[in-house]
Amino acid sequence: MSVRRLAKEQPASFAFSTESQAKADWWKAKYPAVRKQSAVIPMLWLAQKQEGWISEPAIQEIAKQLEMPVIRVLEVATFYVMFQLAPVGKTAFVQLCGTTPCQLRGALDLRSVLEKKIGPAHTVSADGKFSWEEVECLGACCNAPMAAINDYYYEDLTPESLSAILDDFAAGKAPQPGSYEGRKSSEPKDKVQTLTDPKLYDGSAAKKIKIPNLPEKPKKAKAEPAA
Image (tube, rainbow, N blue to C red; front, side, top):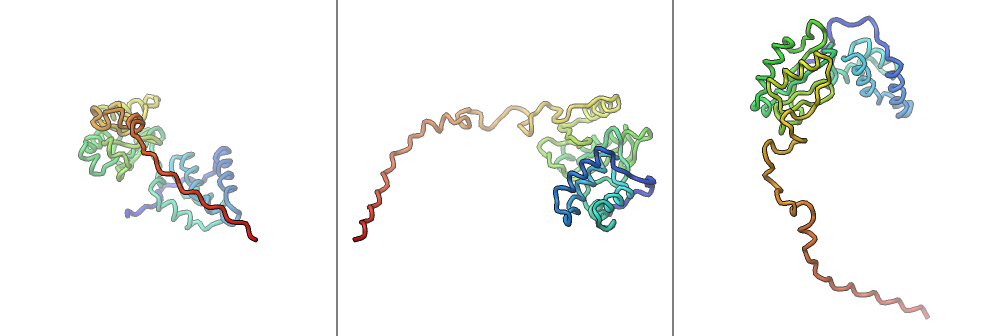
């Protein structure tokens, strides 16, 4: 496992917004008072959704509200890679899958696009809008190569489509997530080659199957009344 540390440059303070604090209080109320530390992951997530990343002041604030040692919150934040410990792009944070299936389908070409349009991995662009990193499998191997951008998956990417997606984000648009080859979910890329006969899945074949009459179960004899 790679070592994960907090960013060297930290903000002076952190405070939940009114909306985020209301959600944090809702999460804390889901647990008995003595177990409210169970809300640490949701509260870290709320802090990240608000600021884009997890800062040391945010960790301290969460520890204070949950009445738990700061080191315990730090342990959670550094263990789960879904928590970003340094600032990321405010407009688009790209997580490019670099595992074998995606590499075989062109992930290295996508990485070149990101390096050209944004810069080196783990650095935020000069305008603060974009950043990217390479990650392990994101579980969409059937639609490789792919990347997670902010909260959504963008799949079946090519250098051209990824470049266009980044341009749309830069222009203030919201590019449609999903497959960029028009596929639905992880259906076959070209034509369907399995279950081509509707009778195999619409139930019509099953209706024609005759079930033999089963013999009736013998009736239980009634118990004789006691004398």
